[in-house]
Length: 151
Image 1 (cartoon, rainbow, N blue to C red):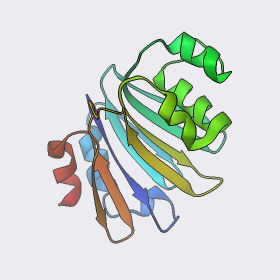
Image 2 (spheres, rainbow, N blue to C red; image 1 turned 180 degrees about the horizontal axis):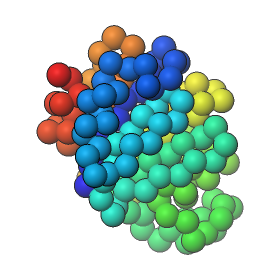
Image 3 (cartoon, one colour; image 1 turned 90 degrees about the horizontal axis):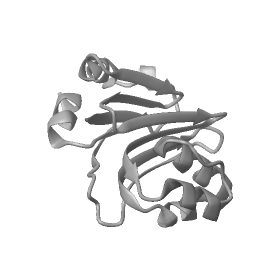
């Protein structure tokens, strides 16, 4: 499983980032998704993505009791991790993340507000490593996936 990406902190398009071509190479046979200022490369069955309007979400891992969670938060059940996290964030904001149970790392970018967040489950069973380089916030679930972005 690979999740890595870059966020343009200056607010410009992700394609303008210095790390963008390296991110494309990191994606390999996986998926490279660009959502405004956010670019994310993903591979593996435990990584899902969702986009609703100006909100983009990348989710790596699994939630415990997703249907019960959806019911508790008043959101649509039957979605994958990214879909549930995106709905929860849209409806309840950052506080919704405290209600998620499981083992996961999540990246959310809200283009309308120009805000993004990176989070892990409460025990950090899935890691997110970060490094700021000028106006770029680089991140990855594994150090080995972050290193090529720094080259």
